[in-house]
Amino acid sequence: MSLVDTHAHLASSRLRDDLDEVITRSREADLCRIITIACDLEDSVTNLELAERFDIVSPTVGIHPLYVHEIESDEWEKELQELGQRPGVCAIAEIGLDYFHPPGDGSSEEEWRNLQRDVFEKQLQIAIDLDLPAVIHQRNSAADVTAVLRNFPKARAVLHCFTGTMYEAEQGLELGHMLSFPGIITFKNAVEVQEVAAQTPLERIMVETDCPYLAPVPFRGKRCEPAYVKHTAEQLARLRGLNSEEVAEATTSNATRFFGEPS
Ligand SMILES: [Zn+2]
Image (cartoon, rainbow, N blue to C red):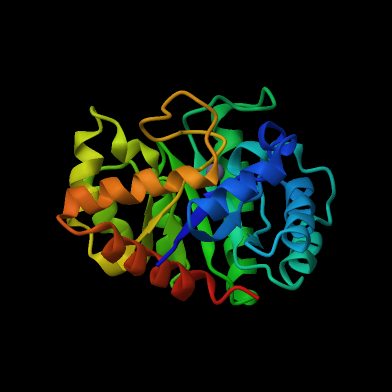
């Protein structure tokens, strides 16, 4: 049974030059699907092209909270809605709130957070209208993300790159959402998130690389690519006392349930 990397930034300039080899290595590592995530509308269009080029790739479209100040068109909602209806699109991603990085445009912290929240809420509504799941980015913003998600009970979401506390995990799980664990669970010092990964119900877990970032051990610090998701899945198996096959089967069927069958 093969694995799904549920969060890869294949449109990234750091993966562009050898993307054919990256995809080949993913197939060799027994991946059956790579969900490519967008940070802005330009990425969204690139993701659609990549899905045409590689049958293993499923595209998402969306605007990351750290790129909201770069939105140029007043028509962005309409554009995103149109992109979201293109064949194969499997999620609105990635969207959310990031309070870790300073305002990208010199605005006040309050204005920056308000803009992020506005764009996040509008995209959640688009996801609901299009009957698509949403991939959520949160950093130093878990309480506000939970508050927003509570206002959108029809949303189906995954808290991606989950590295939070057990309490934050429970908040998301109680609302019916999924958690996706990155290569960080292979890091020796990541004891708290390892505990969360061991305790979360198996049917609510997915695995991801977030490549080109966050390569798991033994590639820590190097450029990451989808093939490395195998190491994260193996660590998840160790943490839960399961074999790799059981983890692959569960996380892949969770990904199919969440994102739908690949088209
Ligand atoms: Zn990401």
